[in-house]
Every structure is written in structure tokens, then in C-alpha cells.
Length: 262
Picture 1 (tube, helix red, strand yellow):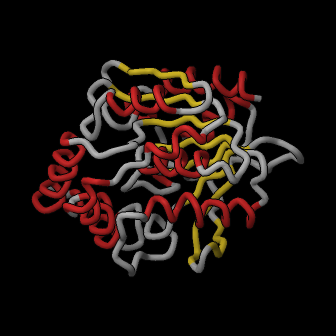
Picture 2: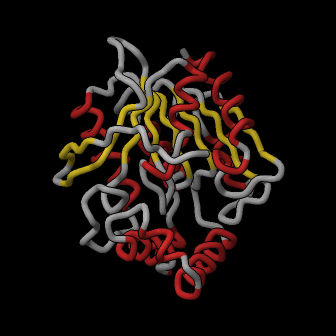
């Protein structure tokens, strides 16, 4: 996929920080919006042209943003806490929705962004039309920690810092903010399964069979405990980023899901 060269990035102040965002196209009155929530080392730009492709397939506008500490949003200056995804879901995302008028949304979340989407929808305080999630976590597995330890080793021994630095204002702060909290021993008890019964909206959850950060146990927990309808897709020949490893499979599944959701 190409980079998001045509996107017009803007900034909005949300919960005391400047967050970067862009629209794939202007939103018409009353349209549902695809809201993209990136992974733990992602940003608005790292989605590349996937939001535009999904928008074209579904006919819906996409709102793509970088969370605090990522991309061109304000640089992370505070140490993340174990509850950082709860804060994103219960404080920041509602404030962003209010600031940008995102009253009717389908959340498209990857990894951390998927977990944030589940917490937000499961709280039951904001309207969510649907959730399309790739490789979300609802609890911490041994394979998750092993993958994050491997990422730390790669950061310290390869050109990964250079590559991360291309997409974030302060790549070091971005990487350490994500890696350090996940490797904190206290984070092993992190669990958001209590939010699943509160989700009334339909859910599509996709995961690569070769996901280096999680197993199919995540999908099974979501399917067993979520209050609304859940569709699952385990994708062969795919790792942690289905939208990059198998984009056509993901776009096809999401297009069908959105057609039913709207």
C-alpha cells in the first residue's frame, strides 16, 4: 500500500492534548463515520491508504487520528499507567467524538485500538453502531509478552528506532511508552473482559493465524462473553496486522459487515 500522501492533517485539542487527525473525505449530514484507532506503535499515517480503501468499499467517510504520544500528536511526557487504554476509551475518545461531532460511529480498531474500542462500547454510555476489530486483546497472554520482549530486542539491536522515528515526532518516547508498560510485571493482570457483556453493537473480530502477539483465545473470549452478535475470522498466512498482510480479505469482510450494520 502507498503512504497517506493526500491526507490533509489537522489538529484538535482533546483532554488537554493536541491530537492529529484527518478525514478521508468530507462527511455528509447524518452519515455514519468509520473511526480508526491504531495499534500500540501506530499512528494515523501508518494506516496508509487502508482507511480510504475501506471508505471507498463502504461508501462511508473515515476519521483517522493519532492518540496522545503518537504520530504528529503531542509527544508523550508522562509515564503510561496500567489503565492507559481505559483512559483513552472512557475519557479521550468521548471528548474527541464530541469535539468532531462523531455521533454515529463504526469503530475500526487494531490491537490496542481494538481493546480501546471494546472498552468504549462496553461502557454502554455512547452510541456505537458496530465494531470491526483486528487482533484486539482482552487479557494478557504469555505469547503477548514474548512478542513485546522481541520488539524490545529489535529496538535495541536493529534499525527499528529509525523506522519508528519516521512516523512519530519522538520515536523513542513512543516506543518506550508502549513497551515499558506492557513489560511492567503489574500489567500481567490487565483484563477488560468485564466490559464485553455491555457491548450491544455487532462485532467483527479478525486475527491472523500467525499473530505474534496473541492467540485465538482472544477471539474465543470475545465471542463467548460479548452481549451482541459477534462474527469471527481467523486469517491464514497472516500475522498481527491483517490490514497489511491480507488487505483484500479484510476489506471484503468489513464491507459485508458494514452493509449489514447500516
